[in-house]
Image 1 (spheres, protein in one colour):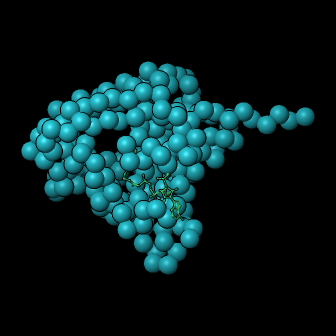
Image 2: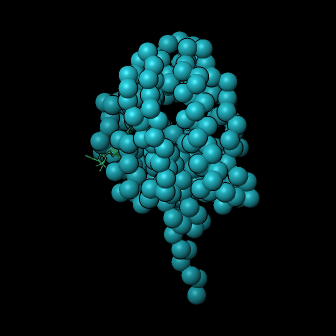
Image 3: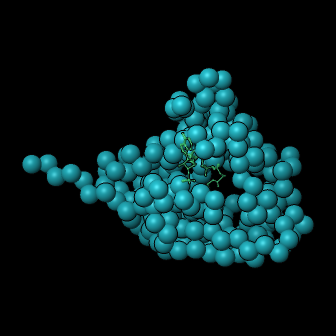
Length: 209
Ligand SMILES: CC(C)(COP(=O)(O)OP(=O)(O)OC[C@H]1O[C@@H](n2cnc3c(N)ncnc32)[C@H](O)[C@@H]1OP(=O)(O)O)[C@@H](O)C(=O)NCCC(=O)NCCS
């Protein structure tokens, strides 16, 4: 079944944060983000703000049967000549601020080191509600950035949680690096978390003869 792809709007934000929390069940997400009102409000504000960001492509996949949002993504279009941002936000009350700073800081530096000033499509976030996973929603959402990348002959980049790596590889992404973090807090005990950094090479543009 194909899901309907639409632009994400401000009215969708609450549902998207609920999807995000339900979908991301890995040790890093659980450790960083307790599912409490202050963290939920921080995520909602962040998405509201970033909906207005120039070059941000937020989309939702909607079930044609129930009209329910099954998943969403944010693609950032290329910013040629600019290095990826390494500034970090103020973390919400209740989050594991040390772990957020360590991991999101390292991931941002990795993005900058791997891509430099090369313009690329950046998949900042993709999540499918567990009720709808394995039905092609993630693939449809990811293709929304890969199609223009292919038309433009541009690279694509993402940070991969371990569970999503097979899907990303199937779509042409290749591992270019990884970080290992030892997680220990009140929610997660003695767990190693590996995050991967993946690039999808540019497709050569067809020659016009
Ligand atoms: C990663 C994620 C976004 C994938 O979303 P999804 O909607 O399940 O993705 P798809 O259905 O397109 O693909 C998932 C699997 O189902 C398979 N699949 C795709 N369409 C299918 C269909 N119609 N029927 C059965 N299986 C299908 C795919 O081949 C894929 O298999 P693979 O993992 O072995 O490659 C989702 O699992 C998720 O939200 N995970 C938690 C958050 C997360 O890790 N996000 C990524 C951060 S880097």
